[in-house]
Length: 152
Image (cartoon, rainbow, N blue to C red):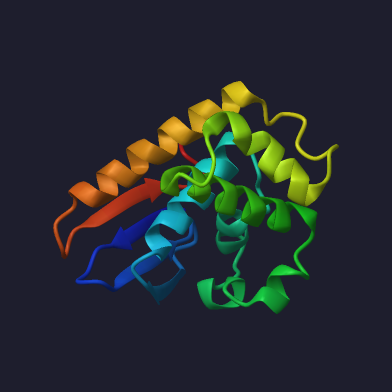
């Protein structure tokens, strides 16, 4: 799936084109590109195929996935992806450091959650997230950040 996040003047547009050529898109506010990028980084790093972008690739619309009632029906992996994206976002705002990220996620999901989420992996995710944010910030209005899901 091809993901495009178009940068606008305070409003942005997320467009996902699935392998079959179908698309889903939505206008996002100024803070959402960072949250979408956090989903991209976290889900890819942990191989979460049923997170936000996996569900979009499988046919869900962005609008459906913006509804908290729908998210609750999607199963544990979708909720895990949401918690990871929020925690990763907190690293960009100074809410937590990379070394605190695994504990923050486990505090919400339970101690046994995500044994693969080590401090080392969290550090890699934070670095990747920072790089994605830097690429986003470098875009001029009207340009788009283009990502592939899953990344090849």
